Image 1 (tube, rainbow, N blue to C red):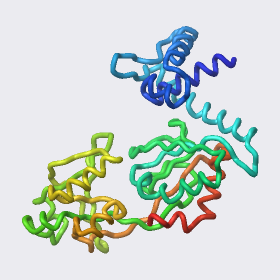
Image 2 (image 1 turned 45 degrees about the horizontal axis):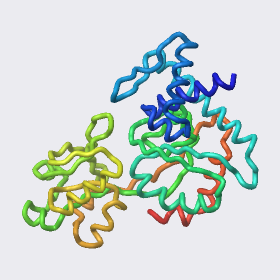
Image 3 (image 1 turned 60 degrees about the horizontal axis):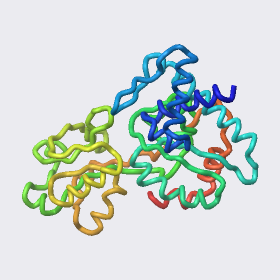
Image 4 (image 1 turned 60 degrees about the vertical axis):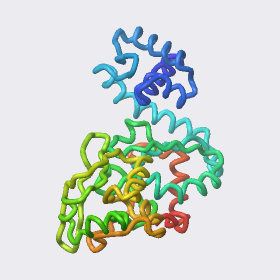
Length: 306
């Protein structure tokens, strides 16, 4: 039974990581050990679970069905074991969070350092992902998203700054040459530096002033996926390549130094900050319970990035 469970865990690790090397790094099991576990499991089930090529690994139809059923179950087993072994005064174990790039950049730095100092027995694993995701199927204990992107039937609690803003800016030299937009639609005649989600969809630029909402899809010379590469958008904007629109926290240093100039600020309405969400249908793992309690007790730390 233990061997079967190990083989199932190996399959989930490889399927989740998209490869043996990354799964080995995350799980602490060698790539050859994972490969042997997959061979045993496929032999026992009489079905191929993974498509293997020299460059990529993906689940077969049978593998996808198995992964969708197994992943939440194994996550629940891990939570149950954590609950048994946890010291109520010193919670231990792993907390797995799935967050978008802007939360990893602007919210978690004000929370995780002090949380980890307060709970040295807890290890935090953060997966940065901007798309919609089933947190249980992904193996996460909790996710952080904004209200319009929360999964259904989840418990959600506020985390981080309770108000945020997306703003528009460009280098003063660029604006001196190309003019300062007076209305969002003027951006259709500017070079705009854009984000493209992992799904392939472009992030539409939305502006709001009072009851008026403007959505535009402006042209531009640079497209990147969200994440650390957003720094490239900021650098490109500071170099005078065009107009950028990102979270205010990301652009604030450049505006303070004068390398970027804010534009169209009357169209940047604040919106509600992020929410930590988790399933109410499963027992809370001790690390997650400790994290929730910590965010409620440390309001100063949570506002530090706001």
